[in-house]
Length: 176
Image (tube, rainbow, N blue to C red; front, top):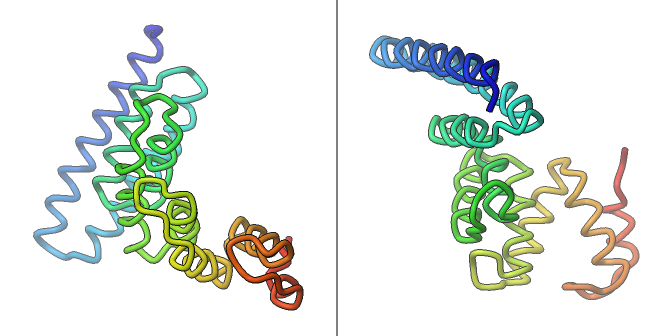
């Protein structure tokens, strides 16, 4: 890791700690303001994660993602879950990935429904359950998730995981 990466990392950590203190202070005063601060802090963190990954600073990126997930950012939970599912940067852990997707789904994020559906269809971190997987894909697709629409269009067109039905397949044809 270069000196520039070290400096950037410590500056980011300092900002994070300052924001964390501000968030704690706000939580004691007014929850809605605290939630806004958390969202802002998470946006700053997530914007830097990509820079760190591109620069090869994986440890810093993972630290930031884990922090944002701990602060209930559903997008960070999905990103972190994808990393644990794939085994990039960390030891592969399908159960942890599934757990992170579940937490993101509790925040009502369509992308989380899609990821959970994929876990149920493939038995990733959970016992395979086609019906539950399709239900989650449909939920995600109906709420605008492109990947879920694309998958369901394919499933219904080919009769994969569901009975072949070209009319239903047409309903899920992806819209760009």
